[in-house]
Image (cartoon, rainbow, N blue to C red; front, side, top):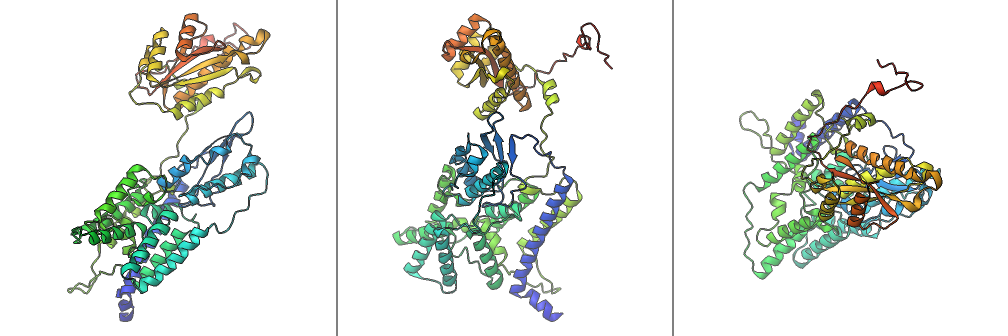
Length: 579
């Protein structure tokens, strides 16, 4: 027993104890997540043939942080791709924003599934893993829909930059045991900064680790994952933080800046903040607690500033932190870096025996870990409290409004809040208008989205009952396109078609939480002329209706218009037997 006790209390034994604590937390986290997922009823699968979902079948294709599920919406008439939607995923928000902003998915639009499945992978610089995984997921789902053989995916998706990074990391490992000095140290730091930071974007961050935890076991072999594994193993074996000592690109930038400050004579105060190391451990504990509770990760780390297309505030914060290293070397590393605190967790051996009872004193990390385990145990017992898959709080799956509920809840909304309505929200309403029934598929309509304040006020002036447009943040004008009208007696069918489109827009507004009201334009000549003048309509375009849109204040309520005495059975005059 004494030998076992001495092994457990030795520095390697204590570091392995830290690893056991971490594994126990992950095990309880995964168990809680799976338990809650089993309790929550899964949403009904998509039954529409026009929607191709990639999840869960293709969740095996993982990106930087995990699977990248997608919903491919096909046009009901042509069968071509109308748009691609992405539910929330575990990718880093900054990198995923770059993927979406690149427009790489726009090239799939108006292609058949077979044509789109044949497109080559077009990766996005700075977010290679994320963009590649999303496109591979989409391609395999499209190939399945088109009854094509699945595309061949390379087992290892590394390029020459990744190979260079691996060689650099091996060099860093060698220099870790044989540290460099002077100008050679500066060369090492510069190489890590530019190759690992700006070119490969392969540094570690707590956001990335959180993504790995949430997306388990959908991991993909990558430089960051190899680096993280090597750092943990080296920390357990030698009790030293290999990564923060000179590999982290942001740490290299700070150290090089501090060296520059000393070279030009900038007065420096290397003394660390008294509670700096504890502060970053508190941040780590708060982040882990947020992850357990399902709170989305706040992207406060400056590491995404290395990637092209990073937000201005991210670049500015990174620049300021590096600039402060002129006066306080490695300020971020010492005070705020929770990723470094996580790596130090596997290195720390500051458990000192108590003189009274010979026991051991808990360090800060173990207190945090035990508290989290207690919270997780309570979450398992208390319904609805455990963390769910994907990093979100386990809530009841979003319930789409029932179609009859939407119909009976629809009301004319003329009072709006000051909150704006976005163009994508208005486009959603217009898409619903396009889905309306139309005789002989003539589609004799066109839609004008209006958000310009001056035009909305002008429309309010020419519409006798359209004063609510002065406070509405947006409107949709439904127009008839005379060149698309049917001929002969069926010509006036355009009125029914545009009426159906207008009603679809109203129902879509109700179903999406917006408020709308139908303002009739046709067949009033004065109104038609006024609307045409405001919007610059040509002679062959007939304004049919205006749908004023905004966020309802809740003043208007749906009216009960049900009249059973107006229901007849089989023929006029025979009342329907209402129960």
